[in-house]
Amino acid sequence: MIETRGLTKHFKDVHAVDGIDLTVRAGELVALLGPNGAGKSTTLRMLTTLIPPTAGTATVAGFDVVRRQREVRLRIGYIGQGNGAGHSQRGRDELISQGRAYGMSTRDSRQRAAELIESLGLAEVADRRVSTLSGGQRRRLDIAMGLIHSPGLLFLDEPSTGLDPQNRANLQEHILALRARHETTIVLTTHYLDEADSMAERVIVIDHGRIIADDTPQRLKDTHVGDRIVLGFLHESDAAGAAAVLRTERKGTQVRLGLPNAPRRAPGILDDLRTAGYPAAEIEVIRPTLDDVFLQLTGRSLREGGVDKELVEV
Amino acid sequence: MTTLIADTSTVFSRELRPLLRDPFTIIFSMVQPLVFLALFTPLLPDDDGNALQWFVPGIIVMSCLFACSMTGSNLLFEIQTGSHERMLVTPLRRPALLIGRALKEIVPMFAQAALIVVVCLPFGFRFNLPGAVIGLVILAAFCIGLGALSYTLALASKNQEWLFWTVQQTLLFPLLLLAGVLLPIENGPGWLRALAAGNPLSYVVEAERSLFNGDIWTSSTLGGIIAAAAVAAIGLLVGVRAMRRSD
Ligand SMILES: Nc1ncnc2c1ncn2[C@@H]1O[C@H](COP(=O)(O)OP(=O)(O)OP(=O)(O)O)[C@@H](O)[C@H]1O
Ligand SMILES: [Mg+2]
Image (cartoon, rainbow over all chains, first blue to last red; front, side):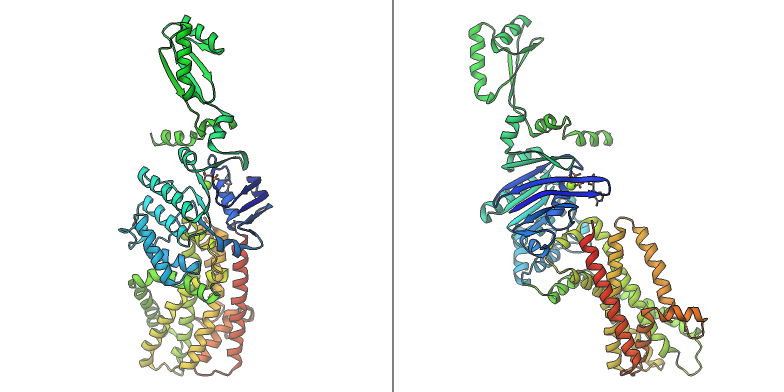
């Protein structure tokens, strides 16, 4: 469905995307993950024909994104990072003209618009001026516009940003249902790590315009971080004994241990320690998050941006 | 499958719909040139009762010109919010985006032109319907080209609204004045007349005047058609290229 070779975009001296080789097969659901400015949007904008690459090639839905733009456009849907609906327009009108832009008849567009308005919970606001909608309502309208022509390949740039948890869950369901029903290929970017984790079978980590990891969320976590167990003891002597049994290090009354499949193996470890005469007083099993993966790969946390924002707001 | 015409009508009707839902703004803007006409006409030299005959086509050209220069300014906001990007991803043909948006600015001006003509008839304004219709078609072509250029300017100035306005106003007024739209050029110095001769709008205005008068098969008409077609072609070419290249 998507095939890129050395895809590159430079804005003057900013290397926004720096030689991306990417293959996405039909039916995949891929999440692009990366901090602000990593080049996610720029990558999507090249793949959707919005901007010409500085170097490299990309084939999307079987057509070159530079030479066969119209063919590409006919076969994809795109929900950008901004708001797609004009502010002076009404939501329903925008949905219908979007359908017509894709060559649907006015009748079909109208009907499909009504379906999407219903299923995305926009019934009360669809006939109001877009400028009067809340951020989350506008976002849902964007999503409805991207889905109007039921594209076989869908690009979503931070679709869930600005949605409350309930609507985010609803959107995720929508995307998964779309995929189940039409076998849609989906490429999305997100800042919500749990979203990438729970939805995508494949996560591509991008930093400074390059792909630095590409795998299933589980394998990324297993390979780059792994499960950890932290055991607490009443006495340092117990901790020291346990550390010797488990062949790991001790810090005060705590013993830390990295091991795959930790939740399943934790009860066995507790039994072993009790048998050896060093019973643990408490146990914590830590499963890695994609943030840990990112931290491991780059030395930076993906959450830093969020923390900064909170500080600014204080 | 769509055609260029279907695509243009999609863009055009999308643009026009908010106006139709809120027609008050159009009505208001339509009255404006009437006020202008009422205040300006008495100042014109009127030796043979021809002031209106000369001035009305000029006013119509001027309103269309200002209107189609709004093509780009209305786009600026949509570039910022992301709705222009959303339109660019659709398979809409690129010229349709340019033509549809420009037409939305021009069509209300044609309604306005009709209003101006009707208001001026009791004051001795004579006009020829077939001539006027041909004149408006020529004017529309010219304005599509100019609208496309305004669109291009909006793309190029992106988030710098001041740049758009500075460049556009700097170009628009000389274009208008050097075409003899509001004041006759004939009595000006040689250099002024030379500049006017190089201004495509001069030919369009001249054609409008003779067409409104009912002189259809003239060289002025031909000159107007050529000038308008050239501006339309250049505008569309430049606009489509800019859309392709734009980051
Ligand atoms: N049109 C542009 N002109 C100049 N620089 C740009 C342009 N678009 C993006 N950039 C720069 O390219 C880099 C990558 O930007 P991009 O929008 O792709 O990041 P992103 O991964 O989508 O970030 P975010 O999570 O904040 O959306 C950034 O440094 C950005 O400033
Ligand atoms: Mg982005």
